[in-house]
Length: 98
Image 1 (tube, rainbow, N blue to C red):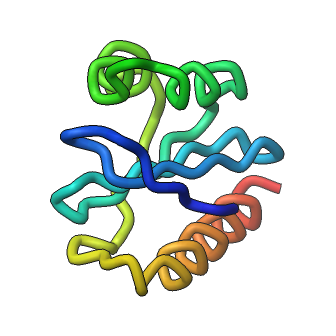
Image 2: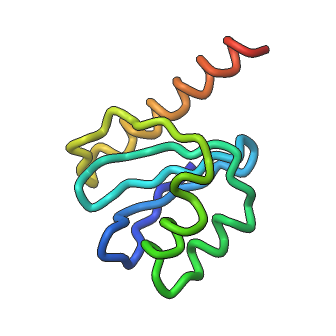
């Protein structure tokens, strides 16, 4: 999964794993969340939205279950650590349910 920087006053980076239907959102504050069950078209519409923050608030937040990731002070150089954490938590989830 690749996190890409987006133009937004609230969101900093987003990434999407189509195989797992997971959306990663990193906010300007450094807080990072993984949203589960997000369909691909929702991610595409987020990327195309004029206001990504408004789209996120209306169509993602409080719509999909989420997990806060341990990346409160995430910097651009720590992206690989966040991705490793996402992969590890996905494996934990799969091990618990499969």
